[in-house]
Structure formats: structure tokens, C-alpha cells
Image 1 (cartoon, rainbow, N blue to C red):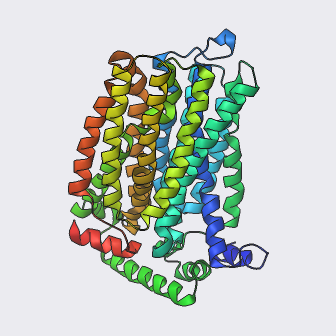
Image 2 (spheres, rainbow, N blue to C red):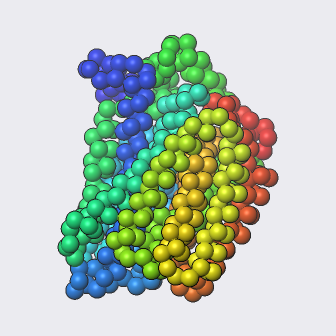
Image 3 (cartoon, rainbow, N blue to C red):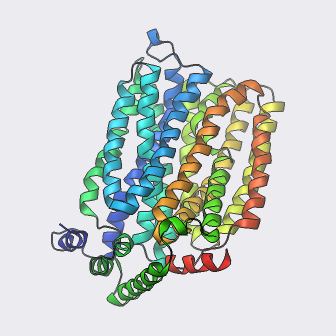
Length: 472
């Protein structure tokens, strides 16, 4: 069945019968990948304290080095997954790519739950990471391509909302399971739950249309128009978009092949900006907190269960901040939000470093450190993360959007892995000044955004492409 036929059938089978409902369901299905992404990256914070226990106590006997390897293996897999998914989504479509990734989510989650050795755990986490990375590159692009210009910022930002919701779910379940189940292998239950969003994503992909812009990129304009007519409020809007796509297609035919396009200066600059944004997002140090907050709090004297419960605050603040970000992202420019967030992140990192370095180790230090972490996450998830994922769906030209998005997001995951792997050892080697190092790096990121990032607010994807070609 063609994508347009499937979408049309949906309107006669009691499924979504209005553009708003079809878009809502399509976004909900796609963001199951983001929910799995959030849960898989967040659950490790709750599982690590139990995985560090000796093998005879139900753990894996992790030390600082193997702890970093287990955490970073998922992220290195994500780098490969985001790169590979870019090719797959351009070649075979966003929907089929999501379906393949859902199978990897299920297999990877099952593997981590039954792992009996550190090498097996690393391999399973790497496989799971391929799915996480592939979803991180494919989901925002799919949402951006089914949404119109007026809805794009709000809908793509729901990807970030589902990521932080997955992380919150992971933190809550970690604390609940730790409190209710006094079993040595509790971390296995935590990791096994990650199969659920993978199953939901797999089932859901059979009920959503293909991306109309991907269809148009393959010359299937009739199918693209049928899908658009079901995604837009009226036929005039759908017709206008399809005409823009046809015009873009004609221009693309006069362009050089993909290999030559990738050598053009403006495309290379766009890719470098995308890579730079990934560095900016990850070297805020956000995942040092998302993965290691319980470890940081335990170093202040807080108990394991109390640290896991306190970490729920990370998820709650992240969800609230993302909701605020969805409101703000439709009203303020991308540059303005990013720079505001980076200023706040610098101040929060400096404050955290001072609290840990100069306050005595007691309950006051524990809660002051938690307050700094929550302040950091408020601005990170409100101003930086949603804007990053939105820009990844907007910046790159249609002809190579999947490939360049996958490449840029892949580099973002490599930066993520660098932070995740080195943070425990940095904390062990240089201690609390680690957070001052993050602050200095973020000042450099602020200068990068100020001097290099163009504004994309209020433009269609086709207009953004014309603007970037002209300006860069």
C-alpha cells in the first residue's frame, strides 16, 4: 500500500479524520523514538549505583573506567546510528527508518537487561545506542517535514519534550524500584522497561503517512500532494507547498549531483555550524548531570536512595522547562534563546563549582548542589536543547537533509560520549574545578552562536534553504 493510500485509508477507518488529529498522531508515534531516547539515556543514572556493586551482590563490579565505558558505549552507538540513519532516511524514507530503529530499540533493551558481563553490557548498550542515535536524527526531520511553517517550531519541540519525559520516567521508576524491590539485580528491571516505547514505535509506524517532502524528493508529487491535503487545513495551503516543492525540485535538477553539492562552500559552512551546535549543546555539561547526578550527590554525603529520589527533580525541572521552551520558541528567535541559555548555564556551572569546592560536606552542600543543577537544567532544557533539535531539522538543504542532519547529530553524540566517558575520571582526577572548566568552554560556545548562527525563525524550509545559500 502506498503512503498516500495508507493515509487516505486512515480517514475512512475511524482513525484521524482531520489534519490536526493526523498530525497529532503522527507526531505522537514519531516521538515514541524520543521517549525511548530519553528513557535509555536517563535510566543509566539509576542503574549505575547498583551496577557498581560486586558481582556476588548482583552488580557488574564497575569501576570509574568501566562505568564510563558502559555509559559512553550507548553514546558511541548513537553516533553511528545517527550517521547511518541519515543515509537510510534519504534513501528509503523517514517512516521505514523509524520502523527499523524500533526493532533495534527492542533488541538492545533486552540485551542490556540480560547482560551477565561487562563486555556483553557494552555491546548491548552500543546496539541500543544505534537506535537512540538514529531516532535522534530521524524524528525531528520527520516532524518538521509533516508540519507547516506555523506549526513546525512547536511540533519539533515536542521531540525534546518526549526526551525529557522519558528521562523523568526513568528517574521516577529508578527511585520507585529501589524503594520497593530489595533485590540485587534491580537494575535489570530498570533496563528491561526500555522495550516498551520501542514496541509502541514499531506498531505506530503502520498508522502514519510518509513524509510528503521525502515523497517529493523522489519525484512522487501526486502522493506528496495527497498526504499534504490531509495534513493541512485546506487544499490551498497544500497546493502552495507542493508548488514550492516542485520549484525546488526544478532548481535541484539544475544543481550538481550530491557529491558536488557537498563540496560547495555554503553547504560545508552549514554542516560546520551544525557540528558546532552539537558541541555547544553537549559541552554545556548537561549529560554529566543527566547520567551522574546520583554520583555527584553521593559525593556530598547523600545516601544512594536519597540521591536517586533527588534526581527525580532533574526530570521534573526538565519537563517544566521544555514546556516553557515550547512556548518561548514560537515567540523568540533561535539565536536569542540560545545565547540566553548559555549565559545562565555559565553562571550555574560557576555556582556549582563554588558550592562543591568551598562549602563543607553536609546536607546544606547537598541541597545547594542540587539547586545549582536544577537551575542549570531549567535554562538548558528551556533555551538550548529544544533550539538545537529544531535547528537540526531546519538548517540543511532538502537534497541532502537526511545525510547532513545525520552527520551533524552523529558528531553531537561523539561530543556527548566524550563528556560521559571523561567526566567520572575528570571528577576523580581534578575534582570540583571540573565545573569551572565547563563554564569556560560555554563562554566560547556563546561567542560561536553570536558570530556564526543565522536566524531561521518564521521561514518555510524552502525559504530557509534559499536564505542560507544567499547568506553563506
